[in-house]
Structure formats: C-alpha cells, structure tokens
Image (cartoon, rainbow, N blue to C red; front, side, top):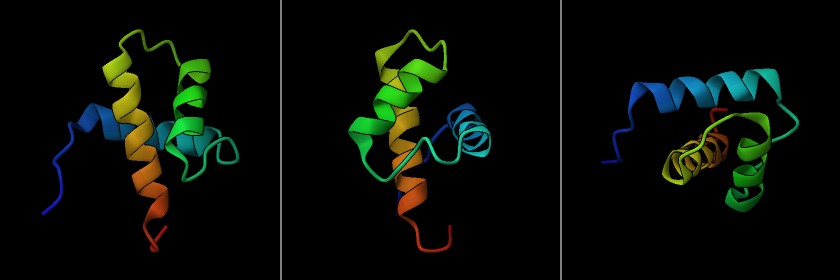
Length: 63
C-alpha cells in the first residue's frame, strides 16, 4: 500500500511534467530545485511533496 496524496499535488506535478518534460528526473534533490524555480509555491512542505511525487512518478516503469 502506498501513500495517498491529495489531488492538487498530483495535478500540479503532472502539469509541470507536461510543460517541462526535460526539466525533471528521478532525483529528488534536483526536482526540488526545479519546482522552486518553476512555481510560486511558498511552502517548503508543499514543494517537497510535489518534487517527491514527480520523482516517484518518473520511477515507475509504466511512464
């Protein structure tokens, strides 16, 4: 069983991946920096959750 994430985290993450497909990788630290530069998210926890979801999303073999 995995963690259940709120819909807005998933929505923002997928939108960022669709807009900037080459900007993100499986590395959480680099994704964290890219989320900070590409969005206006002020909360550190929200930034980390979005970056974590992107890293996890890109790690799956179906993607």
